[in-house]
Length: 217
Image (cartoon, rainbow, N blue to C red; front, side, top):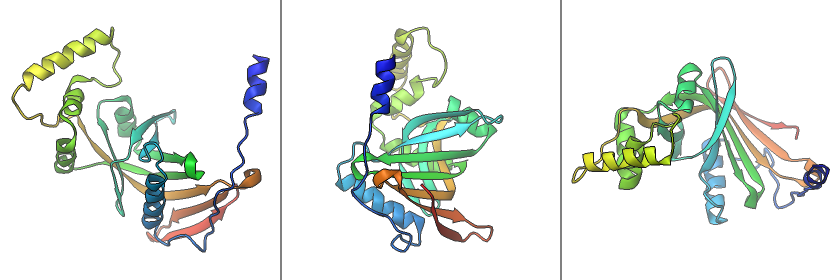
């Protein structure tokens, strides 16, 4: 145990690839995110749209998991899930959440906080139709976050679902769809030497305008 602790404490990486200054960022956080996201794609980051989605119960007990970003715009950031899952239940209790992207190849992190609202059924239908058939069947088969006796139970349900939709289009189940996170705080983090990182934060004001500030690392 002591060796493990020593090993962990000696893990170090000094960030030095890039800098970030408030005078250089785009005035629009979506444009700034779009620039960084495209650079992550160009850098061949493994799954650049992977993000940690953090939610909490009404009592404030947090939970987090990695999901995939499926769209972003001035309106916010979109992901899809089972509404009956643990995260779905927490969102119903407490709609405020946070997204975190980490792109180590670029020594960058983006943190987004705001309120989650459900997408319309029509918007969720459009995205669901683009998923591979196997993924659409999986959405029907999985009672997400519920306890299963074993793997066979899930595989058996999938076989039943496959028979149910044999030679049919797989429509979106009503318990599955999209959430839009409407941001009120967006932080861009650029790693710097000696842990003195650059942190530029966009904060939404009461009049709906955005204020850009630098935060201490």
